[in-house]
Image (tube, rainbow, N blue to C red; front, side, top):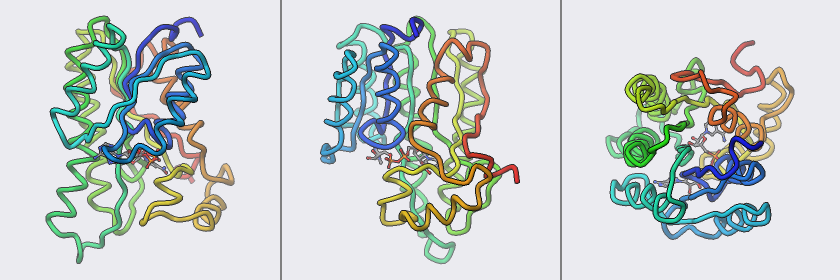
Length: 253
Ligand code: NAD
């Protein structure tokens, strides 16, 4: 995969799940990465760093809260300082919460939007001016932001839907600078978010959900990561402003 060799990717949420699988996928292609982890929550990020380095690529890990403009600026600057370039940006940090409309306080609503939507905007804005050779950006939306209605997740759906509009708009705005912007739209992927979190389904829930999916199971983080990798590689060189659903057929049945 010569074309990704030597490139530099910035990945938020790179300490776990899809972001971690992606850093490893880039490393196998010879691309280096700057990964962020949630401040104070560094117990998994070493796995990313060790995994990348065992493939012979370099990985810089930094704490960054995507709710902070300063943290996002520092993250993008780290790519320039450490590697002298920035080619790929993937906004994979995100939270999942369950709140019915009755207990959807202003705070619950705002907190969700601040991470899952505003966080994408902050990272893309910080990165764009540092991508001097063109490049590619990918945000992680969700089928809940597309065609799949999900009770008790109005805030999550609104944020993930907002991500799609943000990507389309930036795709047009950044085209003259040679930067492509696309969204990946995962269905149900087995990751810390869907498996272990306080609002997650657990293994039994994932297996039950898998039986409703045409493919017969939920997706893996590696399957989601490879889709993102495609959207940042030369194989998708003429694709911008698009949404790519990776859901094993969940939303087409
Ligand atoms: P994950 O929980 O492993 O990854 C999310 C990461 O974001 C975590 O490492 C977490 O520490 C980080 N994070 C949370 N809040 C943050 C903040 N304020 N600042 C910085 N980092 C923060 O889960 P994942 O499944 O790998 O999720 C990756 C992305 O994919 C998320 O945006 C998620 O919403 C989206 N997604 C996941 C699924 C799924 O089924 N797993 C489905 C659709 C969309």
